[in-house]
Image (cartoon, rainbow, N blue to C red):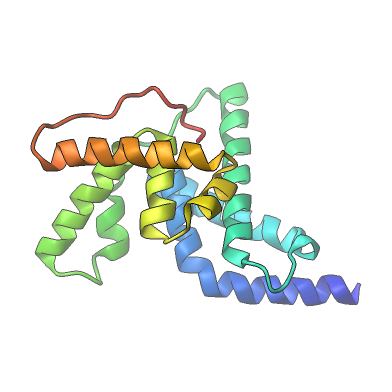
Length: 185
């Protein structure tokens, strides 16, 4: 019992340290839908506390908790398909970038960041998650692959495809991403 309480205390402390990054990741997983993002964040935190004895102190907490978020969201998407057939909100309607970053950036930069994030969120889900994990959160390809539960080559492929699509957009070619990938990663 003491070990469980000690691990829960460690997990609570670690959650405090990564809460902003975890919330941003949860929001990105839900395509910027604030209600779903908040629910995913809360469910992830609760699951992390429930499974605190599984966390090994000294290992990368953020990898562990991001993996929990991916699992919780996959389960949610599966249950929605069964129960409701509901989808997720369009990223451009959610205004993801301006809500989270508005207080940190000047107006022109905020507009540019918002446009880039909207383009990233328009990518197929697996590509957008890979971009956010590697380029925003700074994970190595191997770590991103572990979090996404895919081979490292898949992460590399998704990043290459995302870079190609984003470059085409930046070059003014208005290339829109294909909907070939699943919304589940």
